[in-house]
Length: 189
Image (cartoon, rainbow, N blue to C red; front, side):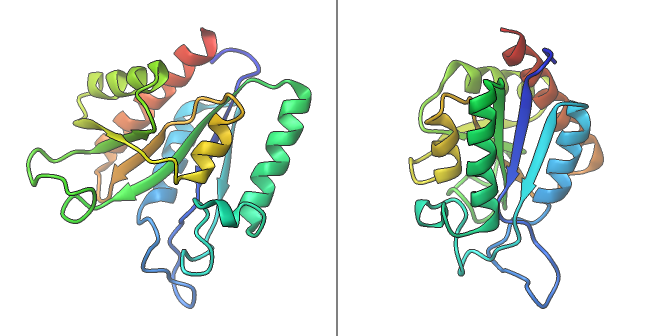
């Protein structure tokens, strides 16, 4: 990775055991984010939240000033902008093949990449994940994801990754490798 570029990973819907279990949380999202973080090596930061969606959905603008995650994210972005620190972002979520995004039962997608438009950096990420042998699909995301919108509003390339729950270790390693290659190429451009 190019010297000085920081990759910021956000995981806004981490699942935890009771008494705070949130049925709207993203199963496996923290495990996937930690694998990606490990594959990136140095120069990355992981921000997570266990705030249940029914209390405040971290991906929505009304929560930007309410939850710890969103306050930390905003403060961090302000500091990094002041330091003129190069930054990439990834907003990490999970999905269930059977129920989310009205996906066909076949093929079994392993990763969905969401963005409001297919930016060159998004296309590159999709290509690199596919080169790892993963079944990847682009999904046009809405402007409703406020973490992604907040980072992109500051000129930070920030695809949203929806990773299918239940991936095996080999598949997780492929996701991590594809993301690491993407970060290397984007940060050296």
